[in-house]
Amino acid sequence: MKSRRPTALETQILVQLVTRIKSLNISGALESGKTMDLKCPCGEIILPPTPFIPSLRDRQRGFLKARIKKHLRVKHELSEHTIRNILNQSFASD
Image (tube, rainbow, N blue to C red; front, side):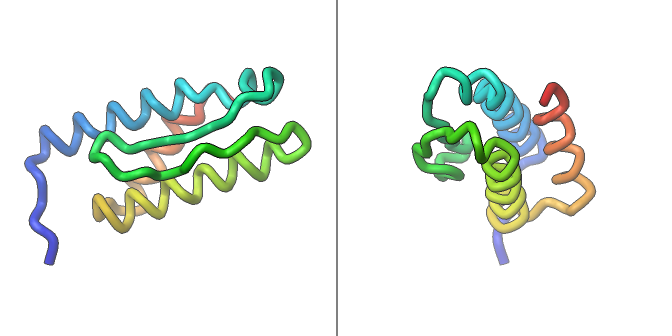
């Protein structure tokens, strides 16, 4: 069984993760031909550098959400309700 981090530390990690997800700015980055990558504040790579492909915008957004969801469920052992709230907050502007 995994030892739990203190709640304050876990909350801080999740807030930083939401900030990093929002900074990806998927809509704007697609137009500029950049790549997306995401590393969790806990140190684990969620998504290695991946080029944006304009014709696959929705699929890439879904792929990113799936990778985040898997990471939060496996690594941080969060409930589906908490993960859904985090993803809604992270992708609210999309």
